Image (cartoon, rainbow, N blue to C red):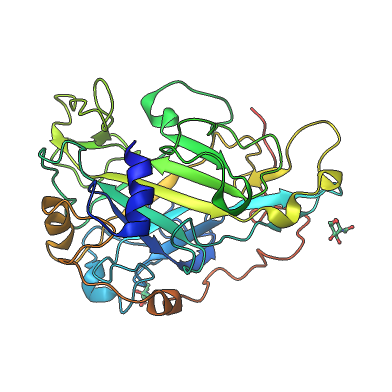
Length: 342
Ligand SMILES: *[C@@H]1O[C@H](CO)[C@@H](O)[C@H](O)[C@H]1NC(C)=O
Ligand SMILES: *[C@@H]1O[C@H](CO)[C@@H](O)[C@H](O)[C@H]1NC(C)=O
């Protein structure tokens, strides 16, 4: 219901359910991971990174992103956060890999790839959320996972197999026909990955050793249904959702697919299952902009926030610092990550 309203909203710009939704275009795509592998150039697997151009190999929590960045690839121009995910490759029958292009998401088609970011306050419209503090970062998902795990974290990660022109499933991400593993059939309109982050914070730590323990999922129910936070993590934070749209259309010919019935897509860490999908977040909004947007139950249109055109957002790019080919027909995934099935 919420999501049908969102669709109506995006079309009519009327004010229904609060849900900050915006695009962040491609900033850089390379093997860097300042959260899990700070200082490593290169890190183990390719990421696509969006947001402010203060993104770096190392990003200490004391780094003031709004003052260090000179542009952001997000349409809300006070958002200098960085957001990243793994990237998807197609594995041809001869064993070579080709990176799957990304494209603008439904209703945000003018964005240059990248991802759609949501900050969602509780649906009752009353419960307040506490915006993240400077230096806050977190990780959700496990790049090494190759099997289905039933817990809140992994139930929050899913894929949508679109019919042509964003057709088919229109419900909330992870519902209806969405799957927890990479779709096992060609998707005429491409594949969208959905990554929901935890919504409860311990109120103290900006990070933790595993980049997860300082945050938690609701102790019962769901964020959407107003589920309570555990006492160890009592502070409700905005629900972050990433949607990344993989334009698989050039790889949909069944003749190019494996003859054993498996599907040909593989994430950059060597994951052909999709269970290793993950998202990284480094907060970097200017001043109290995000808190204001949450307090005002902001929507796709959010007058309290400054925004920029798609053209401006698309022009914020960084040159790759890791010098390697990630886009040709590759005999190995960058980093030589082997395919691992379990
Ligand atoms: C990245 O970090 C290096 C080393 O601290 C610094 O010289 C460089 O200016 C930083 N780049 C950006 C874009 O902030
Ligand atoms: C492998 O297959 C792809 C897709 O058909 C093709 O473009 C590429 O040239 C092939 N590479 C080799 C080394 O045969």
